[in-house]
Length: 260
Image 1 (cartoon, rainbow, N blue to C red):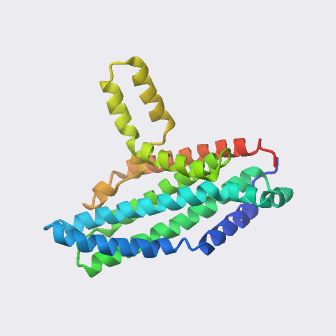
Image 2 (cartoon, rainbow, N blue to C red):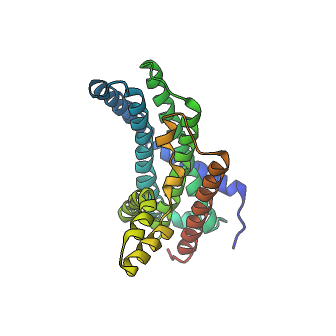
Image 3 (cartoon, rainbow, N blue to C red):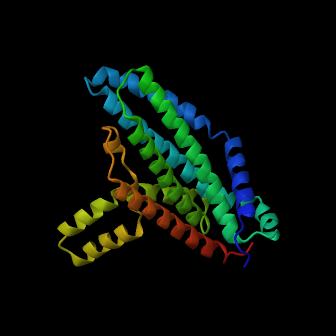
């Protein structure tokens, strides 16, 4: 097995970054801007005195959802696109390990998502400033960084699913992970209210399997200028990184056992 090298990882990730941008994913920011402008206009008619907080909440939620679409649709098809075009044979014929191939793909798409999140956050700040809405930039920037970390985790999940199934199913499973991950803490609460031991154990098992994405989601408090403590932020970031590494390790293990 070839050892991981920075130069090969850089080459693969750079190619993914450039190819993804050529697919005009940056148009997502234009759609986000139009949607945000419409949302602010509508909220101005229905909300009295709370338009700034609601606009922030809608904007941050939009950043997360648009990022999810890119992570799920692009990430779910990254591996299968190479397989269908048979370019995977050319890549693996070179001195590139399958671990480098998976990790490089992940890093490239994660970089694209980081750029998209940064641009959409900037657009949100511009709209807030133009409308003279009050907001605290620091907590919102930290929240955006954690959204990018969350999307990186979902990209790893998409690559994992794409390593053994079709692009469409990988996309759907990634979206399911997103929603289940944000619901996972509620599973623990529900399991405590269940009388059936089997159902309780099933819910606890699902909580252990699905990532707890609420640990990387601070939108509800950031709109009020608040964040968790620094130790909690560090612990949650560590959780997200470890879970991402675990998903990539499983994806690499599955992908290394496929024949092309």
